[in-house]
Image (cartoon, rainbow, N blue to C red; front, top):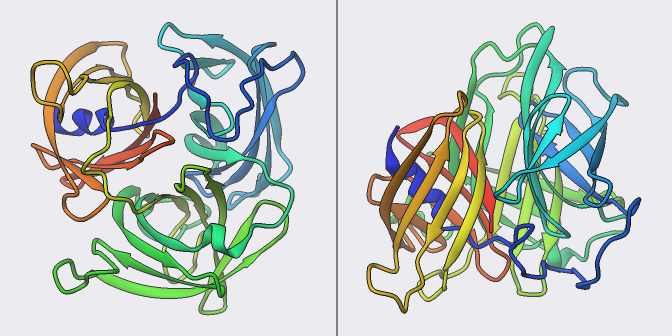
Length: 352
């Protein structure tokens, strides 16, 4: 395994459980049993779910709101075990969950899809029952995606899932543009491999619907932040004649040249690996852009990896490792996404 993609995870800046930080929107008060936090989450297989976690009772439950596999209305529940790194393991499916109260939830869940069962990778933001202010949604975002390479065939993703990256721009007037593998604000130096757009409409229930060419393309949820940051979770639909379902995550573009990234960050990858990345204090000897990561694979084997990162590369808001992996970070809220363009079979999300 290449250490470049692990060092990627090191450049997060999340506010994970047990970090001692108060997350965006967090009052700082201790939750009581039965007062679980509910998130709207997009899944890699094209399902939109409500996911509720009670950190006191150590329980979770979910309900499928929208599905490309006929699972709408399906519910599930179970218990949680706290891991030493502050993440959780779910039972009965023994999946990993990283929870940032009032900020983000990232995890894996076993669901029925395409005539069998599959591990759904999901990411969600706290549920909002009112409408969004258009200015909250608008902005330029760097993005990472993980979706079925072709439209579903016989109700299954036969082409396999692939990762990708790029940018998109959302206008407060209700339109959006996307740019695959390029910078939508600088197409001269970073041209788009594909470029397109469409319209978006706030559904008034914490979900934004994006459409193009007369077809619903995705359901979108948003984490607006007092720090000025934004995270979009995009549950991509199956689009006959175009492409299959999947998950896109976007981070509002920000200059990361002067951001202090000190800390330890947990993450989960779509391939089942997980780990903790550590960024040193810039006041201590050594390279402030270095990182060390302890990763566990699907079989429970651990390895320690290290690397360095270049900020605002390949363009503003990204960080690139010395082996070519890309990192997205949301300064002030600690949200991080990462992947390796040379190995486009996975993505990772994590938090501090």
